[in-house]
Image 1 (cartoon, rainbow over the protein chains, first blue to last red):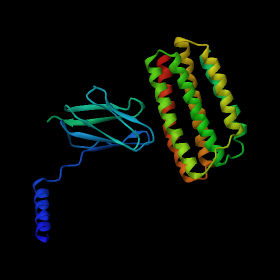
Image 2 (cartoon, each protein chain N blue to C red):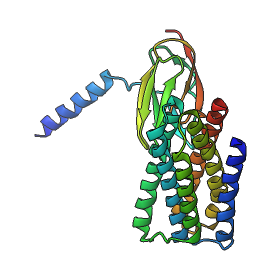
Image 3 (cartoon, rainbow over the protein chains, first blue to last red):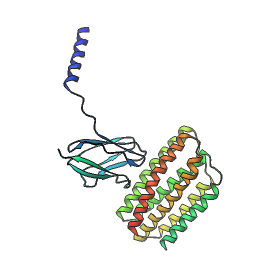
Image 4 (cartoon, rainbow over the protein chains, first blue to last red):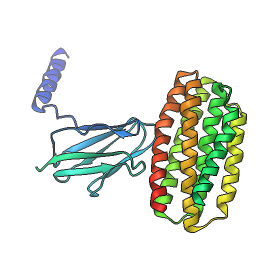
Length: 106
Length: 172
């Protein structure tokens, strides 16, 4: 039994060593009716997490229509950056909430 | 004419709320005023969704329904948890009677005239409610969670006011 447990522990260690921890998704907060600062070092193909800390739903919507996600209160939503450039985005429900992502080409 | 009507509506709201708010309201009264104010804006938005064909106006009205219903759900959950029974008071009664008059006045309008009147009233209404929140209701709130909810509401309704002002400028 002990040998089995040791084997399982070894296997677990091997598995975690083989799969290096993935980089956490860049995050932008939606809080107090504002978008938080956009993370630096974004690249085309990255996935961004929008985290809504407000009590109402928001959207993260690219002005060039390359992404659009509705994020419910206290939930998060993901978008994938399809291309590089300066991508302006806003909340369709609350248009005074705005931001710009600086995205490097892949 | 439109500007005069809007100014009159704003003045009327201030006039009805000012005497009633001369004495600091308690938490039960604040909860009733805040909830009533939200319900009034939901009713106005539902009227807009029945009458307006303007895409931007309808989008705005849908946001008013979504947001004010969300805030009021939180308010109900909070007062239930705190065992506070919202208390009707002269301020919430005045808000309701003023809103009924506005709903009636707008019900006779159609097309661009309705859109302008609805949005102009939204500007005036949010300005008045936000002023009351900032100057009276938030300072008077005793319970910390109620105060926090009112502050979140003020940030939200300030955005609504700016949104309405931009819309009003587009419709002018």
